[in-house]
Length: 288
Image 1 (cartoon, one colour):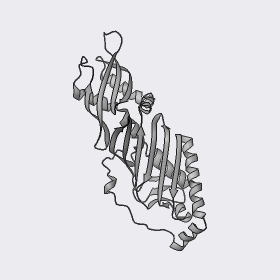
Image 2 (image 1 turned 135 degrees about the vertical axis):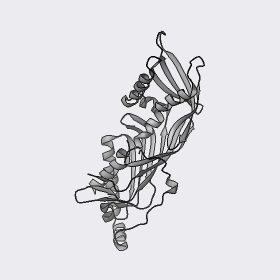
Image 3 (image 1 turned 120 degrees about the vertical axis):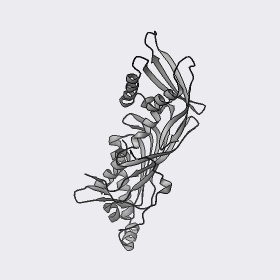
Image 4 (image 1 turned 60 degrees about the vertical axis):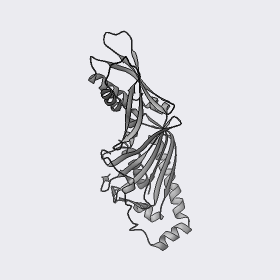
């Protein structure tokens, strides 16, 4: 059971964290009917004797311990199973994980919640502990990101690499020396300090934009340059801003070639960015 729980957690939170497939709408997903479960009397016995309850608590404890090895933050885990035998076989009712003050590879999130969408889920393990997702496993998630989260994420090496790419593209025209984000009056502002050849010092460029879920991604739209004396066409500005979009960069921790990610909504409420969407772990994936 321990191997199953650790493998499942890794799949959900970590391996789903680096889906090239888009447009996954969980509203259209049809859950599979229960199949292959132990007999009703066996499940009933597991419930009344308390063995299933104990197994769930042990599994939850193992998951939380495993989280601490790889992810910073405070987590709670809830796993619901049919019986101890079904859990060992990889069949379970639901899985939910909640977290606060999260740090995953220098990507910061204030709150994170993910849970399975269906009431029956099946992830099979063979004798060599290879795992197969027998049917697609859809999950839905909610993320809360603050201004402080974004600015700390923008200090990561991976994000600074994006700025380096922009500087190569803008070679001879400008260089982005530093950048930061502000959220004020439920609006988002991207501020860059730009160095221009033959001009002493740096120039602060402030950009205001709206947020929108577009084809499953988070995009800056209605981009407005607040520095009227800085000459850059709006469509080019929008392209640059979305290339170095720290929000989309942050949510991409839920992406992987073996999962499909879709952002359904993105809103700014009380100066916090709220994102919700879905991840589907694709069937017939085998891992050692």
